[in-house]
Amino acid sequence: MKVIITGGAGFIGSHLCDRFLADGHTVVCVDNMITGAHANIEHLKSNARFQLLDHDISKPLEINGAIDFIFHFASPASPIDYLKLPIQTLKVGSLGTLNALGMAKAKKAKFFLASTSEVYGDPQVHPQKESYWGHVNPVGPRGVYDEAKRFAEALVMAYHRTHGVDTRIIRIFNTYGPRMRMQDGRAIPAFITQALKNEPISAFGDGSQTRSFGYIDDLVEGIVRLSRSSYHEPVNIGNPEEYTILQLAEKIIEFTKSKSRVEFHPLPQDDPKQRCPDITVAKRELKWEPKIKLTEGLRPTIEWFAKQMGVSVPG
Image 1 (cartoon, helix red, strand yellow):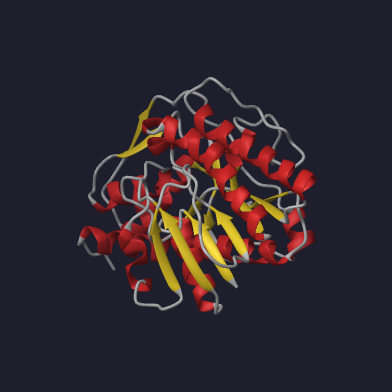
Image 2 (cartoon, rainbow, N blue to C red):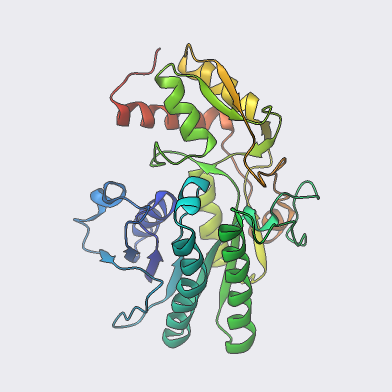
């Protein structure tokens, strides 16, 4: 296949580029590097089946020749990014999705939207099923990301129902692994970098809020399986193994043998108290469930961060 991956130089997108190239496909990575990084795809640039286009998908894009599949993964995805880039986040969720869908329609290509568990907002249902409509503050600071993704989902389903575009929607829950940015702002990269420096670990609230952490390899496998299916409704992909933020911090301190102590800070506005996927649909439709536990995935992630920082992990 010839595959377009918007946001292909980002954390998840670059791993997706790796997978599709390994499976023998041709990959066009579209990224304006607003949160992506050349370092994530440097190892691919010598591959004849890989092409990088420096482009903002919020603006129209024309690609010559046939296209088989478009994976729309472009968007700032961490709170630190979308709070700093609110307009760009709204644009890539709306105009970017519209441009990518228009290309899929014109090329008769399949289309895959990377949505997010953030569409559930601060959920009042636990764990979150795809049938849950969410509890989102549309005018709060996080609304720029939440509503951009909710609009993108509505747009994808409209193109599917109205124009017959062959679409998929994945709702990605917290994912971690090598190539996350140290300044990402999310819990795992923040805690690891602080622990490796023996600095206080910044937990928000009282640390009792929960998250479910899925390793990047499990996510990529879920994406590939959904792309090969004929299922058009949204699908949760995440690890239902639930941890409190405090448990996560303690685990990272243990694995890094850090002298860090947890320091508590005020909870940001609209920060979800619980986040855990119901993966019944993924199990049924994709025969998928995560294989890598947090205790297994943290080790290579910590090693990757330590290498970027030029420090060693105590044995």
